[in-house]
Image (spheres, rainbow, N blue to C red):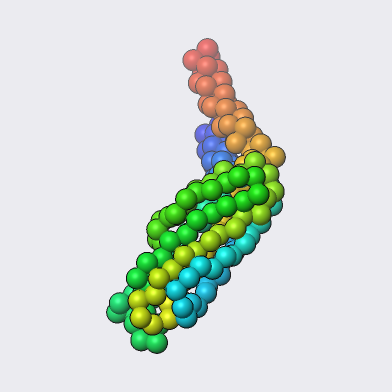
Length: 163
């Protein structure tokens, strides 16, 4: 009976820890915009963060040489990120994910600079957001459940030894 209690408490504790990990990594997509470009130049896309956390931004050329037809791969595709608080990432090549830590809600401008390879091009900008913290202290609950299960196990062994 004691072993069943131990196994149940350990399983419940592991499930609580697993739920806490899944909950803590809640990611929201701020934007995922695809743009068709007919002439070389600059495009500006804007997105806002809901609060403090980490923002991940990627610009991707959606056309490869094998897919070329009406659209063609860009000869050059770069982007930079700026905001009103002074953020300036400089130029970043397409395909490279940039990570930014923001202290609160802000609006970020993504400036995409492209040089066409003869035909129109197609790119995608994706920005995702991970909140800085969550208010649910589930890992502590999971540790408490596992600790209680271990106490049951060692308490049962100690009683057997004294009898």
